[in-house]
Image 1 (cartoon, rainbow, N blue to C red):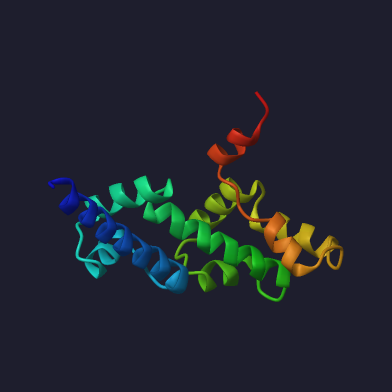
Image 2 (cartoon, helix red, strand yellow):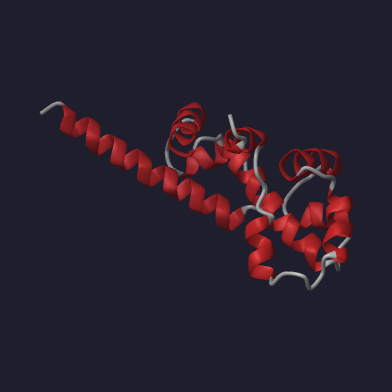
Length: 147
């Protein structure tokens, strides 16, 4: 019988983690930090970070940055904003941090990505482009390499 309360707690934690993930998906361009996210679901920042990583395989901050970079990729493909404008539009406060994270996730700097997107304009439908250009973290890329 002691497992029932533990199972209920786990389900409750998972529901709160989904709320955090949904908030990040909705509010990625807003200033978000782990403390604010944790307060929103009545958890400590440390507990949220541990539980989020266990459930989703990455920290809340990494998940947030991935959402921001995905949106940045779409804005850069659109081509009507500068890299700096895209940086601030997706909620990043530092162009340097944005460029570094973009390069880590995408494999090229934002300016090079936009130039490449301009050259490829019209080659693929946007829905296909979005899917095939999804950021892949280095650890994910290593998993897909043959042994």
